[in-house]
Image: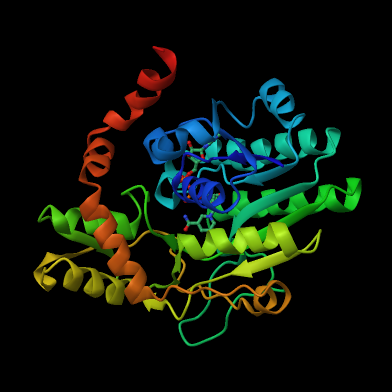
Length: 334
Ligand SMILES: NC(=O)c1ccc[n+]([C@@H]2O[C@H](COP(=O)([O-])OP(=O)(O)OC[C@H]3O[C@@H](n4cnc5c(N)ncnc54)[C@H](O)[C@@H]3O)[C@@H](O)[C@H]2O)c1
């Protein structure tokens, strides 16, 4: 089995590649990644001799078609995914998330691949009130900002290829991930790195934004379960193990894990269109796939803080920007 993993040098994609190599060593993996600021080839260093890495853009028709012809499955992670960047540069979100997904679908259809798994987000469903409710597979699409709007469009194209062309697709809509190799612009790795360096952490607005945190390893196991047992044409919602907490509660847990006090909190002006709460009902995945998350928030955060403490060289390279030279050193000057 040959699997094309798009965006495999990013946070979740690289965790998935590590997971798949460890659990399915008989399979071949090709990673296609443009290495934007969010892609870091160091994330794949320890599995470099077990995979094929191709630097390229999912919007590149010729490249994508030439790769997909030798592939059985595609697991599609590549995306622009940072909400704060979307407001400044919406076009790259439309290009990669919508057109890039369409390009992959078109290649998958023409080469009749066995499965196209699309990795999506619960943010396509909009947000929930603080006092209740959860998203599930029947939730209506109601994205409120550019990143989730572009992911919503990509989900619709994926389903359209299933209904129109019979392409064997599956989709997962997952809640917020955390864990190793997370780029320190997102709240958990940013706060861990800042606190370890003795810097303050910026908390948006009143800090009462609630997220349903899932450890990235649970997400990777969920995708594996969908690939192996999921029904073609279906969508599965994946969420964390009792891990719904506010940003303020999360911050306090990180302060405790890094031996800092609340004077390290700095409240900053809120982001426009900031979604209040996300929550996932993953009972369909539990029922149909036998999947459920296993890593609770306290255990997961402790592991993540330890991972960052043990990978200071990775953090330093990312913080200084030096990680972006690594591809050139590995592949271009060879
Ligand atoms: N991070 C989360 O909490 C979360 C939650 C649910 C779903 N998702 C989805 O999971 C996927 C991966 O998210 P992530 O957090 O790992 O993102 P990330 O930003 O860490 O990684 C994205 C990767 O895609 C690559 N990429 C971007 N544009 C590309 C292009 N045009 N061609 C080829 N490669 C390109 C980047 O170089 C990077 O390696 C995304 O589709 C995202 O919507 C993320």
